[in-house]
Image 1 (cartoon, one colour):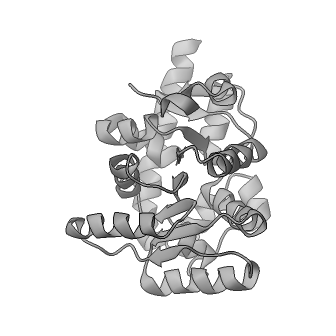
Image 2: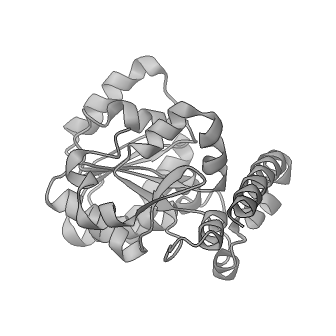
Length: 260
């Protein structure tokens, strides 16, 4: 199975820090190391496909071979999820910290404003996308937004969307779609997309655009961000969190017992 593009697969930092936890591939990197790699990709024009893993995705990958392929073939796979971080540490893996996708995105917006990298925003509802653009203009007045397109489109529209992204001259692409749609989209088009850094950001536009509140910093540090989200939308999220968290706990317990 391909572990990313040849150039990045042999990058010393990525080669040394690639690990597997519960059969899920990931890189044990810090936020600063991640941002340095993303910046290197854009500055040197070396295409990089980025993704993250969390509890729900680790569980889903075990039953979805296509999703696992989409994740495993990314160049850079960060740990975005307190459960994955804690579980990996319990199994003796050296993982430095959680590197959340929304934080990567926000930090890259700031870097783009400072260094002239132009983002393309793809995904979310039009009202949310408009709110993201408005906030970016307030937070980073010097940032040039290469383009923006909401996430409500049909497969027949994808060729035109890819052409528009490439024509925009974007240096980086942020795709705000749910799993596994964003993973499939980026894997499918990674060879033809011209932005040099591409990543799926899930619901990060909803957070940055103000549709969804983010957990307070203390809850983030305590690994309770999932609980904050659950309290915001219990009717929609309780079953998803209960199912994935229970499955993850069972998998982790079985693996720990096997190693005793």
